Length: 499
View (cartoon, rainbow, N blue to C red):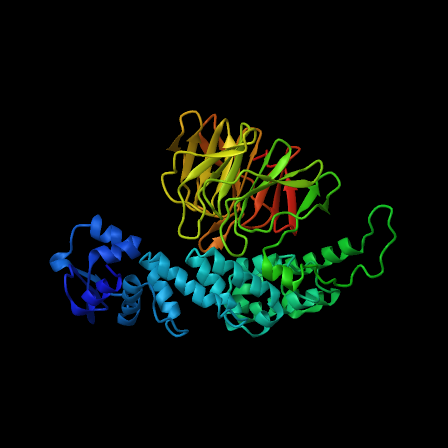
């Protein structure tokens, strides 16, 4: 039977077993089985919820044109997308979990990406969990930053933390750091009373010395101090080096070529020497982003991720001693935005996105066999989460304060003691058999609070805050010090053992 027959029956109102009423204006006769095929939301509505009276299902916030297009796609596999209707349709499809239609809308938008709309596309893709569109819009923003910052209206709507995420990137295409400073001033000038307080987090350490004379900077003692300290650091020669008379001159950033950036995510890898307090480059890594990383048997594993076109199963590993890469065994499932942890000679990969939705699955890697094995799934779908190994078990966190514990011996997940405060995108590290959760995002702001979990007492307790608020960063332990690293451009260290 041809699929178009179902659409003919819908248009003729034959064999329909439900009515979709939108905005109190228009009714659409539908077949439940067809909508269950296109939407997880309708599948839940029709198969789990009690039937509506007279089988009439009301959607007061959906417009008739959007529902008409959604039904057209559900019955025919295509929809008449235009620049005027695609955003509303994407919003509707996302709310109704019509995955194929969301993907079609994102594909349509990708082909029309410009400097004028890339900020919109970035935020839109982020809210709908579309890593492919998000990656392309974000790369466009980095490559055309000066044009976007000077002319794109929605650049001014970015939050302080979103702007900080962009301007701290090494891949940002700017000829001089003053261009970044001008962009920050334009952003602050849009709402100066509310935004002047954010200047201190917005990367003022590489601008020219004249920036300290700017009236916006001079309004903040913290900003003036930061600029003066940066000037002192840049002017001070390293041991054994002569003073550089050009040390105060702003330097352009180094970035991959436009062709390289267009083709793939960044492949640069750097190692940090804590004793020498310096970074060093190593052989380029795999071309991917939104991946997981773990250290096992002296090697760094780069797991899954997104290569600019698809989510990946592949795993690449680097021997730290020789700084050479090799292919490790692929995962069972492709996943980006996953959480990864090493425990007792194994690597655990959990959650993430596969390009069609958020995952609850988990799997384990054994280095001696190079094989991945599927484990018991988590209790709920999770992505952009973090995990740590503590006393032989995996501790997994989501965007709430809820904690899941995985026991490898029993292959079971259980609920752990909740954190004190809910947060997402925070740093996580284990030091002296205690778990530290630092910073993160707690809507509507970024936080600097740190809390510590003691397995012996099964309690979370607050400890000293970080020096500044941050999110989307990593914590790691080196020689009894916890380091907070963000975008390879800001490093801070300290021993959080005290109260």
